[in-house]
Length: 232
Ligand SMILES: Nc1ncnc2c1ncn2[C@@H]1O[C@H](COP(=O)(O)OP(=O)(O)OP(=O)(O)O)[C@@H](O)[C@H]1O
Image 1 (cartoon, rainbow, N blue to C red):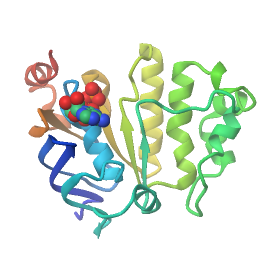
Image 2 (image 1 turned 135 degrees about the horizontal axis):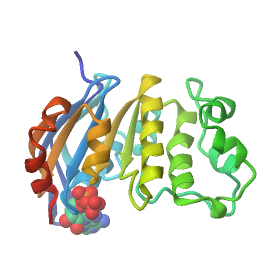
Image 3 (image 1 turned 120 degrees about the horizontal axis):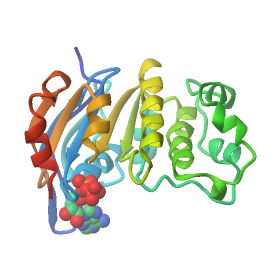
Image 4 (image 1 turned 30 degrees about the horizontal axis):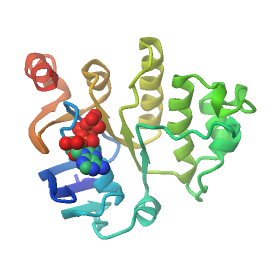
């Protein structure tokens, strides 16, 4: 199978600081893949590098067979990638609907009505200001508003962070819904329970490198290794 996203020998830098060291990974069409590892291991930097937000990098990144390594982030997004950063970036003075309709819609993107049908709580909250949403609702809104662009691959940075277990479960269901619609997901997580329920494969990051790859069916047998990689 030709991968949807392919990252080859990615090295990334913040000034003099060499943060990613030879990261090679891929995501197949329709696959959910997680990047796990401790704080500071390089997971977010990998997403930023793929999106073209961090330009100080070497290596090759292809999407749908096309080299996107040199493209600015707006042109990367136009190829069908969408990034949902950890900060969520919901505008507190705008309503849910206004937040939803902020990103430009593209012809293959979801309409507001389709989003409301799939996630009815957002229709109910349509006129509420962003400041009145719970953390879980903000995460949901941040994840689904990028659907208006019709991405083929969603890059999610710690969607479960700071949320109560019951809400984390709901976020997992949303990711399932997106997967069922044919979308691939590259997910940064520190919550192994959450990641292992969702992901088909896991890449383990330590100090800017991928040191292990664990398939869904291997997670149970390798749980102790995985917990060790994540423990501080
Ligand atoms: N803007 C920045 N300037 C300088 N160094 C940075 C910057 N952002 C991250 N770093 C450093 O790069 C390394 C990788 O950070 P990164 O955010 O990719 O890690 P992470 O695995 O996503 O962890 P976290 O969960 O903390 O975000 C860390 O050592 C971090 O301190």
